[in-house]
Length: 278
Image (tube, one colour):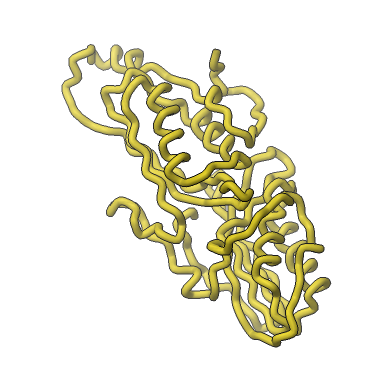
């Protein structure tokens, strides 16, 4: 039996748990308005999720924006905190494809609301496919450098592992980007999501090793600022670049987003961009 999560201390579950969804009947509020079974209107509730993530079959995270369409004639709505907890339960669950995730969420929400719910998932790399009313993704990959997220890597480490980092002999001056940084608040346990930019000069950092290293923070608990300083320190110590900048754009919580910028260059300054998840 599902229990209402409102007013309760929350444990953040990271493995698929559809039982977290809690239905709220529409009839109670509509009765106050004198609205019965024959609705005097047509419509739909459109929810947008900016922090949806899961693991692919090899354990690599996938991140996406999601749109959920719940018809106004549904018997129930999904209580919003329970909805968030349910989506978080996908974080460490493996799926074969985005289509599988989309179908599963649609099935679970349809069962919760007692209506046919439609779901649309848009990977961040294709966020221009959002509905026209939704904001578009700032082209951070184009602005900053090469996007790492499409690399085909197997992942089995979800706590910081600087030993994953390796370098090559070539000397480069480049910027690398990933939307797959996830850390967790040490106070509440809530997941924190970020896009990260790593600019450096020196021996080329092996791209697959860097992506695995970024993903290794996925279960780590620490504050945004400390996580960025740890990434900066690990790369500086392990890869020994001549110059290094690490810049993370975190999604907001409680109306605030925190975007730590650390650089070995005293003249470097952060660009003030706004990303779709922010």
